[in-house]
Image 1 (cartoon, rainbow, N blue to C red):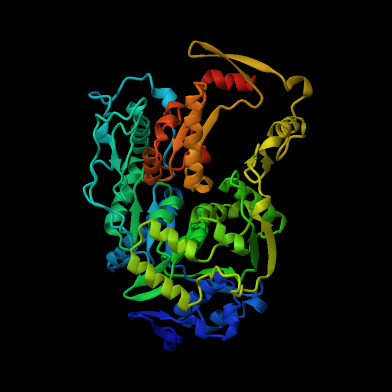
Image 2: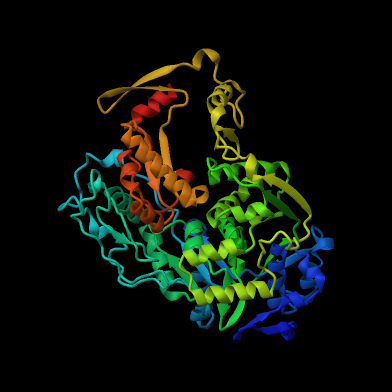
Length: 594
């Protein structure tokens, strides 16, 4: 047991709830620590056993101001998240360990992950079919074309509802919908075969494109998926989120996150390490987390701590209010540029200042996601009133929210919005004014290179001239205006430098923000009403991060307009970003080479 058991206390109005009151240690020294370091400190106190985590480790973290960058400290995260590419080796290792234990005469059933582990199967989807590629194809499933291939849907046959973790918004089994809907001009393109979001049982559309990609995914990955199914049945302390459910980082935000863990009436902060670089998104919800390698993750699953050099913490002070024309991605790209210039590689970043309260949780997670682009380990937004409002809106149980708020305030992990409140001390402070941010796009090659929208044309022209590198294409001046005619489906099109051939609307990473996804839907609505069309050779796709995204796009009425332009739901999983797009038509490939 921990030598710090004397500081275990009952929680105010909830005497049955217990916690380590770490704020009693170190006097005012604790109150000057950055919030992210306080989470490390609490973990070291709670897990101190004199062997893996020693008292000196806890005291080194408490002395962060003088020990940063000079000592290594252990950290025991509350849970682990995996995606299938990196998760399958870990599960195979656990299966092998069970076999070894059995061969040695032991009980293999005792071999299980030591901490809660969630594995999301989201990297096996490939866009073999998009709307333009199958709209004229016969229905391979036969029967009613309005209900194609229903037998292939893994969620259709799902008879049990997954338990919600602290959420009360679920209303029980929802109606699968009425196939005879008449919702206007594009009603045939909405909810051809409604299924239910597995977490909240909300109806989500399932167009033919999803089913065809799903059939290919299941056929390609049959052996892997069977192994995952077996693992979900035999191992304790692990949950397998099935394919076509959502992307690891978005499922982590929507469903897996606790913010505060409660185990047998004992409270402690939620924290996580994961094998996906976008694990850092969860810091926007006030949960300390970052991406690590497979070996480190597996060691945590075996009960060992992660070891890290006690990091510097860069305080990022946000002031002002963003322009209503600036999206969350504009804010992200601006902050990313500032932090790259501030050299935050290998450090924690923590946000404070009056501007933080202006950002929604969706905006915060979008910012926290970009850590790999500016090199920080994580970007932390402490829990505050905005966070609690978000959790309430997301359906968290009111009683649990009250306990959560009381606990976080008791251990001083709750950020006060009032300007009079004392801010922690940081290694350095970077100031960014949200008022100075204007609309940007990123590219043309790297996501961290931002270009003001009004400079996009001139910037691309300059990139054609520049020497081949991170931005330049080095195209000879006499070839920059080359146009190549191409025959596609009986029509002639002309390709030139800058033509679009792949266009994906994705709801993961930067686009997990509902405001951006709905803006894309409204833009599609305006485009359809203006009579605009997308050229048929362009690989278009809409890949929501979860069924909930499809639900709100459908409920808001913008989904049929996206579909009309070719942006039809292709499935739920990482696709275009990791290169999982089917080859372009041969005629287009040849034209590009020319």
